Length: 252
Image (cartoon, rainbow, N blue to C red; front, side, top):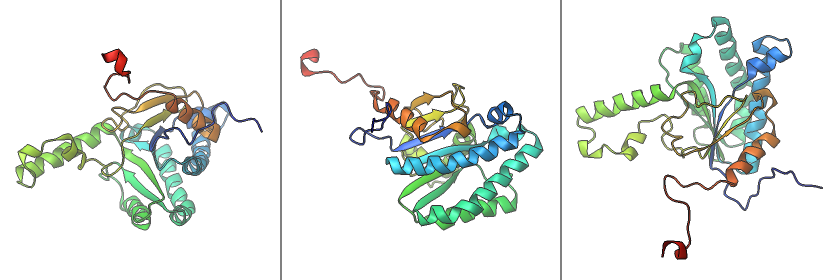
């Protein structure tokens, strides 16, 4: 059987952590003459297979941008529908994720969320907190600026209270206040739908991530598209601000 041109090679470095901005549900539905909710429902199905595909490929950590702090400006009917889809996803998939050893974390602010939603998020995290096979992180009511601001406020409060020394004002210490504490920074950030912007997503964590932008709308995003993004990642040289690798002769 002929191999895919974007086949992922296990011998090459796999990204430990992939983060995805899931974009294009509304446009996908519009192209089919259907309401936006239809696109969001299709997007949930894509979430299911991407979680499974990433795990099978060997990726250990996946973060999905589900609902941003800016999404509150959308029509109330759409927000209600999105929240309903999240509840249904939890009801339908939580036990399966738990049995597969998936640890689910929710990144984002809990401020302003109703008690039933808070209880749902707590149930997800409590059920799966001891799982270690795969890390699935849902960025919900999340904004990168908001996360940094909340972290900076908590950090400053602890310094004022004497819980943290002024001499501990380091990046490593600050990161312990972020929603993502304990997770590796994303190696690869993927955005679907053709848009080429970060949209307030993991601003601190993605400082040295590789980015892949694809024209594929999220409901159409397939295993082959995921493999193509990883293949692109594997063919890049990550420098983290340093020079490219050079031979001894070149620096002599």
